Image (cartoon, rainbow, N blue to C red; front, side, top):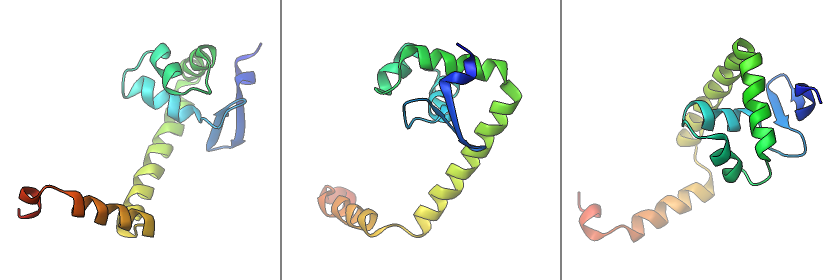
Amino acid sequence: MKLEEYFNALAPDDIRLKGTRIGIESILYEYIYRSKTPEEIAEQFHTVTLEQVYATILYYLHYRSEVEAYLVDWLEFSRIMREKQQQNPSPARMRFRRMQEENAPKHLQES
């Protein structure tokens, strides 16, 4: 089996593991930035096999510069989306915040 056969490129900025909805960025973020082992990653993502995790890491090692650029773009997109969500939270997020404030211990509310 060729390494590329493990993945579906839905768009230039959306590469997923075949048979799952998991993007390679999710696997690689855990591996690179959180220093998780392949076994820990496979356990975390229940729809992904250990073989798929290793294939993703191998793909990263084979195409390091391209995949690093892909990850940089993904991290920047994620940062922008978080900022937008903070500036314009959804009604559900607003309800959740109110619930948190209402349930906070009194000594924290007085600060």
